[in-house]
Image 1 (cartoon, one colour):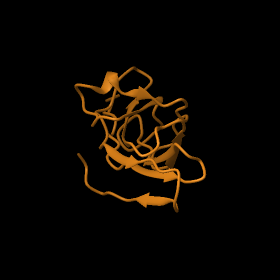
Image 2: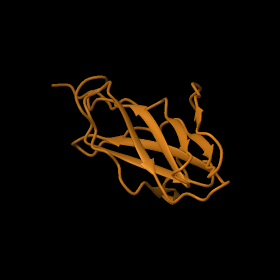
Image 3: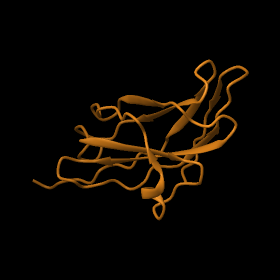
Image 4: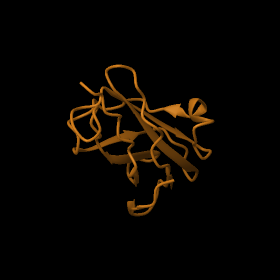
Length: 128
């Protein structure tokens, strides 16, 4: 059987939550472990106050909790608390299959965390 590669998550979106000062929720569509089918093994979600890329990925901070991957095509989300108010934070995600094969880095999205004002939804379609 031919093993297909992991699909890269290419549309990561951020929302900051007012009332939950210092928290941000990110959303993505789950990839499969064999391209667009199956279920990935795990996610590695990270954030930083610098723009995340392949070179500095390991310096970014892992989310406190990463959800268990669901079947390919399912919308998923994760919330990270204790982010610094008023500071621009960047977010990225990688996926791994049951054999330890890692995807490429997703697009990187960013949001300034605010503790006052209405919630703001940030929608970006461009991949980085």
